[in-house]
Image 1 (cartoon, rainbow, N blue to C red):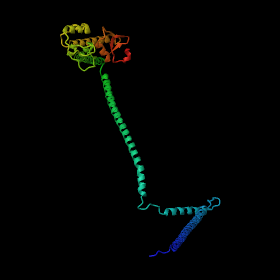
Image 2: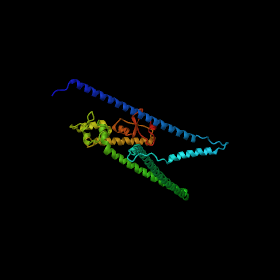
Image 3: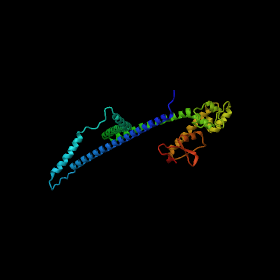
Image 4: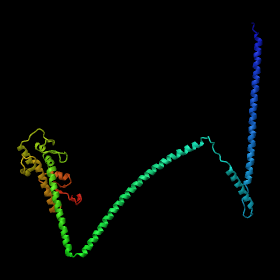
Length: 352
């Protein structure tokens, strides 16, 4: 098969391209024309709507902008017309249906979520404030209850005291002076007997405490052991064994009776004669006797001098140190070997 000549094919292709180009240009020009025409129509419509809105605005302004009623001219109708126009405008606005979102709109949900987001923190803050206020109210109520109970107790005490005073006054009016004197003397005797019994009971309890509880610790301190109150227990075996220079018990060393007696004599002096070295608990017995003797001297001195004199100690011992540490006695600030009891009815500064 023979091919067509190359020249006519090229001419045909060039003609087709030229025709297509002209059609494209025509189509583009047509689209631009239609777009410009649409813009012009839209512009004309907007201008017409703007003119219409301006005309309506002018008419409304003319209807509203009427002169205010002048009392001298008596033009009441102008003011009435103005009010009617305003009422008509408000009425038309009131009759117009409100703009509400569609049924499938998410706007109510968003508004509700925003409102909840605002209300939840406020509610929590209100709850915390209420809880704090409730606690304070309960505390105040408890204080008021306590104050009320105290007031009731005081009231009962006062009422009882008033009854006693009234009874005493009425009884005093009935009795003569001799009967009153006898009654007072009997009351003083009963009070004195009670004080004597209480003093005897206290002295017995103190002596028992010293001999059974305190004496071993005082003996240990006097023999070079731990300070009274620094350990929980001191036995007779520990006292018999003695203590080292460091205050420790001499373990595994047996002290003979002669050495023990010499040690007791050196520590306790004349009191050591009353107990033999071979007695079990001799050190504790002597320490108890030393404490009792010291207390007896201090009490007797306080009674004789009214609490103003110091007792001169032969030497500083565990008993005197313990009384000072326990605030039962006080040393003379000018002489450390003088001691006296603390008067618990006076401030401590009065002794110094």
